[in-house]
Amino acid sequence: MGNAYYPPQSPIATGLRGRCPRCAAGPLFSGLLSVAERCRACGLDLRNHDAGDGPAVFVIFFLGVAAVGLAFGIEIAFEPPLWLHAIVWPPAILALAVVLLRLFKGVLVALQYRHRVAEMLAADSGGGRDEERRGPGGA
Ligand SMILES: [Zn+2]
Image (cartoon, rainbow, N blue to C red):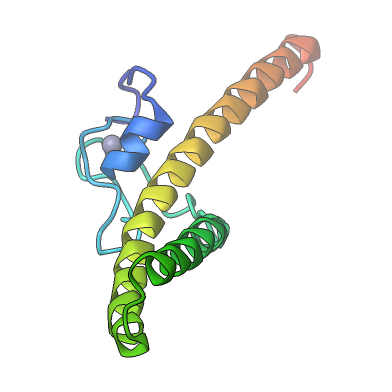
C-alpha cells in the first residue's frame, strides 16, 4: 500500500470531486467540511493536509461580491419587498458558502499534496547525494 505507484492526479478534478489527491478513489472528507484522517482507498495520511483559512478567504471574497451584486441586481430589476430579501438571502448565502468551502478546500488540499510531494522528492534526491559524498568510511 505504501510503495504502490499512483499516477499523478489533477488537483482541480480530485479537489472538486472531493476525492483523495493521491488515488482519486477514496473520499477526501469525513464530514461536511472536515478532511478525513486517512484515505480509505490508498491509506494516504491526510492529517497534515490542512488548508487552514485559505478556502474561507476565497469564499468570502467571491461570494461576498457575488451576493451583493445579485441582491442589488434583483432589487433594481424587480423591486421586491425588503422582508423578501431578509428571508431569501441568509439561507442562500449560507448554503452557497458551505458548497463553495467544500470545493475550495478540496482543491487547496489537493494542491498542497501535489507540491509537498515535489518537495519530498527533491529532499530525497539531495539526501541520496549526501550519503554518496560520505563514502564507505564516512559513517
Ligand atoms: Zn487515496
